[in-house]
Image: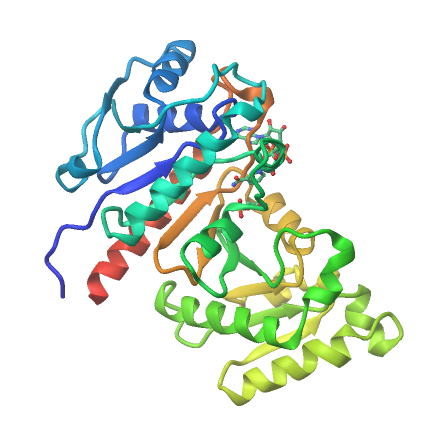
Length: 335
Ligand SMILES: NC(=O)C1=CN([C@@H]2O[C@H](COP(=O)(O)OP(=O)(O)OC[C@H]3O[C@@H](n4cnc5c(N)ncnc54)[C@H](O)[C@@H]3O)[C@@H](O)[C@H]2O)C=CC1
Ligand SMILES: NCC(=O)COP(=O)(O)O
C-alpha cells in the first residue's frame, strides 16, 4: 500500500459567465474536505465573491505549490489564468472561448503528470466555444482526444442509479450508425471493469437498453437490436461480461429492474440522462470512465440565468468532489 500523500484535486471553473465560478466560491465557503485548487481567473473570483457577498480569501498558487497545498477554511487556491475579455454574469462572450479550453488543457497536463489526483470540471457552454472558432463537443470527448485515449464512457450516477451511455454528443440522426457491435463491446468492457475496480461491484449486473421503441418489437420497429445489439451482448457474454438486454428503455427504469442493477447502459444521451436527472438533479455526478486519470463533473450546465445571483445550488459540485476524493483514495490504496 502506498504511503505517498495524494496530489490535490483541481477544479476547472468552466464558462466564466455561468454559475461555475459561483458554485466553486460557495463550496470554498462551505470548505473543501481535501486539498483542492481551482483553475480560473483570480480577479473574476474576487469580483464574483463580492457579488455573492462571500468573504473568502482568494490566493494565487503555482503548479509547484500544489504538492504542499493544505485544506484552509474559507480560502480558495487559484491557478490563475488570464481572461480574454471582461465577464458579465449571464452574458456569453465568444472572446473567452479560449480561456475555457486553456483551463482544460492545464488540468489535463496536471493530471497526466500526477500533480493533480483528479479533475473535477465545472460547466462549460459548448455552443460559445464553437462560436469562438474552437471545435468542441463536450468534456468527455475533449479529455479522451487530448489524453490520447481510444475509448471512454460517460456515466452519470446518483443515489440508487448509474446510467452509462454508448454514444454521447451527436445529432439524433447519426445515433443509429454510431451504434456498432464494436462500440457496444468497447464501452461495455470499460463499464464492466470500472464497476469492479472503482465501484466495488463484484459481479456487475448491467442492464442494456434497446435503441428502438419496445426494443424493436422483434424486428417490427427497427432492426438494430437483432442486427447489432444482441450479437454484441452475446460476444460479451463469451468474454465473461454478463448483461441483460436489450430491454425496452421505457419499461427498464422501474424498481423491478433497477433494484438489482449496478448500471444501466443506454444507447444515447437523451435516452438515459433525463431519467437520471429527474431522479437526482443537483445531487448527481458525471464521471468519465476509461481515462488515464480521474475526472468527475457536475450534473448541470452553465445556468446563465442564475450566474451572480447566489441562487445556484452547489450540491452537484459537492457530490463530484466526494466521488473524485473517494476514487483517488481507492486508486492510492491499490498502488
Ligand atoms: N458539465 C457540463 O459542462 C455541462 C454543460 N452543459 C451546457 O450548459 C449549457 C446550458 O444548458 P441547459 O440545458 O440550459 O442546462 P442547465 O443545467 O444550464 O440549466 C437548466 C435549468 O436548471 C437550472 N440549474 C442548472 N444548474 C443549477 C444549479 N446548480 N442550481 C440551481 N439551478 C440550476 C437552470 O437555472 C435552468 O433553469 C449548454 O451549453 C450545455 O451544453 C450542460 C450540461 C452539462
Ligand atoms: N449531459 C451531460 C453533458 O452533456 C456533459 O458532458 P461533458 O461536457 O461532461 O462531456
